[in-house]
Image (cartoon, rainbow, N blue to C red; front, top):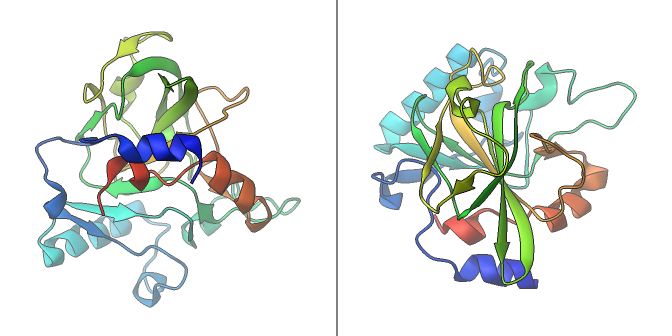
Length: 225
C-alpha cells in the first residue's frame, strides 16, 4: 500500500451519495462477464437494465447496489467507444459504481476545488461529469463523479471550493447519462494529466496495471465493506 492509499484508508465518515442511507442498506452486485443471469439480459437496453437493478435491490431489501472495481464486464460491447477495431477492447471497470434511482443526491467525498466538468455525451459515455481536486499532506489527487444530471454542471465554475459531504450534484437518468440505469461512477485518480472533465473509467487488459496503480480502489476511502 502506497502513501496515498494509506492516507485514504485513514479518512473516516465518507459518503458520495445520499448521506441518509446507511451502509447496512448497501449490497454488492456482480456485473461481471461471468454473471450467467446477467448474460441473459439485454444490457444494451437501459430500461431493462434499470428493471434488473430495481428488482435486485427489492429482492435484497437494499437501497444501493455497489461494486465494479477491477471488474471485467460485457456491458461495454454495445458501444464503439470501447470496441474500436483498431485498438484493444476496453472492458475492465476501474471505478466504483453505486446503483440507485435518478435524482439521488451526490456528495463530495472530500473537501477540495472543482478541477473540471463536462457533458460527455454519447452511448456508453459518462454523460455529465464532475472532477474535484484535493490536496492532503502534500498529495494532490482527484475524484471523478460520472453519470450526473445536466443540472449538476450548470451554475458552477472551475476553482469553486467544495466541502466534504457537500451536495455536488444529482444522478442523471438514461436520457443523459450515457444510456445506463441510473448510478454514480466514482473514481479516484492520482495523476490526471491533461484530461478535462473526463478520464477513462474502463481500460483494456494490457493497460490494467497502470490504471490500477493510478486509480486506487475507491472502497479504501468509502469503507462500504
